[in-house]
Length: 262
Ligand code: SAM
Image (cartoon, rainbow, N blue to C red):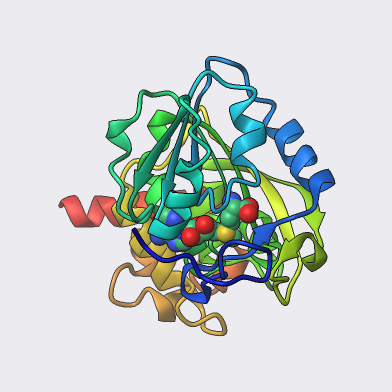
């Protein structure tokens, strides 16, 4: 049995490498649970339950709750509560097989900040199994996810998220709501997969978006010179990537796909 470590909050010493900032503010926890508004028969999946700050209030409201946690010491703590409707999976959410869960799934979590973007990209690939996702992330990341074209913070994350999801910043959470307190503000974001997603080939779309934002100050002609010429697309390549809206990127990717498949 792993030894429990001494702690700031009584039981477990927070591990930086797992992005552990535990929610302690009951008002915020209640607000998050109200945002999720779980129904008894929801297939709820929590990423990174930690010591259960959100897990236990959620458990009271659903018939069954699946959680994925990487830290075995925390799993020990969760197990000690002996909750029959809590199904604990030890593992890495970054490569966890979502096919193990009954779709449609509602995904929730106060995500480890150091790997929040890779987790979002992993879930993006499984969005057809998902009803919605409610996450706590760094506020700055949520702002980038929901930024409009033309803004300085509009980039790869904004385009990749908004091409597939409706992205809504729900409320901001201050550092004092956690133990240990992070250095920055956090925010709750609510994501719902778009009903009619116009991206036909996710890999090619990602390739175009990534290349377009690789050098923010350069024009698209420059950024995409190995992929697409002006003659091959109706999008004006003398612009910078930040000027293009989501539909423009979809057109760019489709024009690239035409070349690719020829
Ligand atoms: N939900 C708890 C709370 O709100 O107090 C903990 C949130 S803490 C920010 C992030 C949690 O994710 C930790 O419990 C951490 O151990 C877990 N975690 C970190 N990396 C993970 C990974 N790759 N897969 C699954 N869980 C992970």
